[in-house]
Image 1 (tube, rainbow, N blue to C red):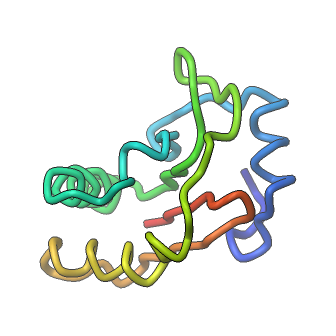
Image 2 (image 1 turned 90 degrees about the vertical axis):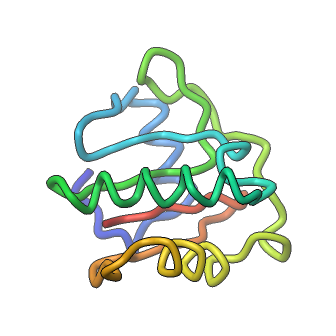
Length: 118
């Protein structure tokens, strides 16, 4: 995906689904239940996922996408951004990964999707 993260929108995600953009070493799809509700166990898993990307080539983790066989199939039901905000997600990651990841970017997208780039 060559579109800069700051320009991503719901259309970007829908295009990835339509084009069947497969997961790779630099792209991972996760359903909303992977981070919502954000329990202690999910905080650890989130931090492990982000840390793994940061310790390799980097990439994007997109929360809010259903997939089948590493191919995105649809946008998940989402979650209320007032309950799990971009700031809370960033705080969770930064408090569980040391040293902090300087290149961490989290973008909230329509339909309550969160895109994480490391």
